[in-house]
Amino acid sequence: MELKFIKTISSKVLIKQMDDIFSRLGTPRTLRTDNGRQFVSLELQDFCRTNGITQITTPPYWPQANGEVENMNKSLVKCLKIAWSKGKDYKREIQNFVVMYNVTPHGTTGAAPSELMFKRIIRDKLPDVRDVVGDVGESLERDLDCWNKQKGKEKADKGRGAKVSDIQPGDKIVLKNVLCPPLAETHV
Image (cartoon, rainbow, N blue to C red):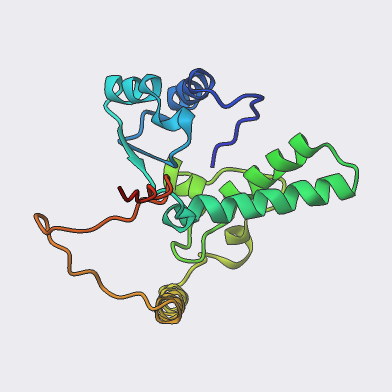
């Protein structure tokens, strides 16, 4: 995870911040964004085209499509609330959170995000658990975690009545316009 503190969210500012991140980590193949003005601007589209990045925008009014970001935002808000209630420097606390997130092994992969990204373990203040107990994330534990997540997904899908889509390329579909109110009918 990378995090930047910015005062404005214009396309120009975002491009500058992305250039900074990409100079260290490399240019991604895809960039998933919501439909905010700064993300759908011609300036950002040109930046993506110039750098060979395929931009994927989430459907409007459906934040679940970018669930990973939404979950991270919840964690960041919680971190901010704790820092504020304890009178701590929120920027420092957020940076501590980012380090903790990047070095903590993930339940599914058994490896920390930084380890997957850089092929090495990033040091932090805490001793590495592998030094104490050996390799973490045994395959049985990983399989059980995946199975539990699949069961949770099936339950959530059933609860909201989700069904497998049978839409094929070339099929005609009907869309509901949620951005503009319907035009009033006039009778002559």
